[in-house]
Length: 225
Image 1 (cartoon, one colour):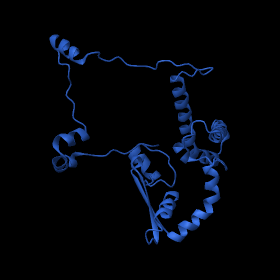
Image 2 (cartoon, rainbow, N blue to C red):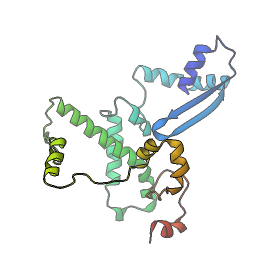
Image 3 (cartoon, rainbow, N blue to C red):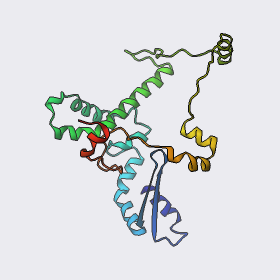
Image 4 (cartoon, rainbow, N blue to C red):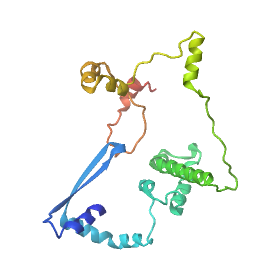
């Protein structure tokens, strides 16, 4: 809305604008949202948030935490976000037998934010340590690693000298196969041979656009009991 208001303010004196159409494109979520609003309504909305926006611009006003925190530059060190998530953690770590279903249902939608906050704090602390900062009770160590060939060509030659085949035959993945055959040939000859397995069941917000799985079908399709 603010972006639309900014564009309207910039071009309203140049063009005869009656309405504003806002588009939000989120490629990682494969989502495109469109919203249309009349010019006068957008200006009226702008007046309702003017005072709040002016305070935010100069660093004042009340902090509000939510899913939008992941886009904030201060997400790692924000005190308000820490307070909210630590408060949630106290509720979440209560033993399950002491929680009612209503309490669990209230906590569940907020766990994603708690998990994201934990990841952000860990990432910040690691980045600081890698730049030389010494945390009082923490230290940098090397994580687990797996052995790998130092020189693959040398290994190939050595295995062949021993009389063995160092390679295994493996069917190309769908993306690689499409690239090999070309999309048209792939669609005409391979598409009918594909199937899409059922996805793993997960709980999401009721506002999620995906179709709800009916509980009557769970036993049949997902092996539930």
